[in-house]
Image (tube, rainbow, N blue to C red; front, side):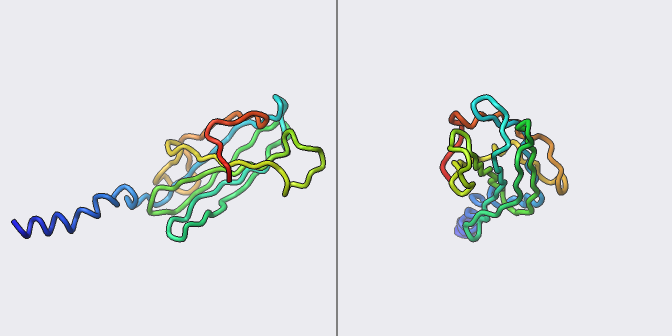
Length: 147
């Protein structure tokens, strides 16, 4: 009986960590959509894709994109992680700001990409389901938070 208890106590921590370290390997994520400012397409936006590095608690920039003149954009990234990734977008924009303001003074917000849009184990760059968005930057976007 004591041996069974010892084995149980030895294995218990691995049960709690199983979800964190399931050997996910290659994971990809993609977002496409349209960006507006007061219902007009805008390209005065910088969209960056990030993922948190768990071991050193920092964020790794994977890529960035600027929308086309019609406001449409597309960004994707591939990660090789042994735990679930937590990708998010950092959006900087000049919507409702004075014309000519340097980009360092633009408004910004961050938004996490829902986990259901992360593709696991299909190979680099393979995204099965894109997060489709349509945002008007003059309004609050559901899920946005301060960066």
